[in-house]
Amino acid sequence: MKSNKKTLPVNFNKLSEKSQRSWTIPEIYTDEIYSCIDCGESCVFTAIQQQEWYELQKKYYWERPVRCQVHYMQWKNKKLTKISMDQKLNKLKEKPNDINCLFEYAKSIIEYHKANGKGNLQIAISILKKVNETGELYKYCRENL
Image (cartoon, rainbow, N blue to C red; front, side, top):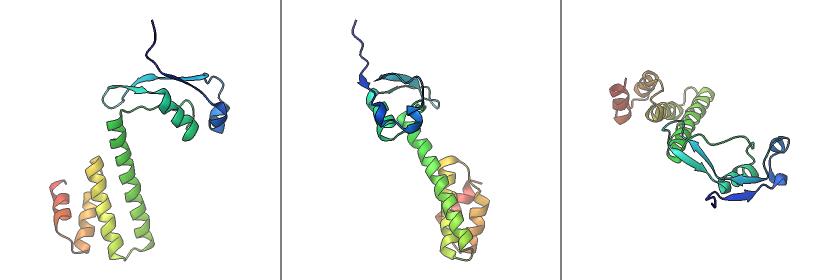
């Protein structure tokens, strides 16, 4: 019986330095099935995807995906909103009296809350009051406290 799994040869010279030091890397990439940690859906980590991860993106060979595409994008979005919020806070620390920085930080708190259900909306409300912004953003905060 012929297998439906696709295979590709591993180009050891293109692997990351860390991966090249690993002992038990097989000579071929083979489609692998995994379950999403968020929804349990079965997904395929294809030989082509593996080749891209390990040889082009230089990820460590034993690193594997753990989420389906939908949940990966949600997770990535959450992570990016957190990074953005942290960047806005750092900018605010540099310019604590800058109204635009204050407002941008308040907006980032709200975006973080929308993406993660986290974020201190009480701080966002305080900032919005300080910058005289009591429109939709303010209403969102009040409704979600």
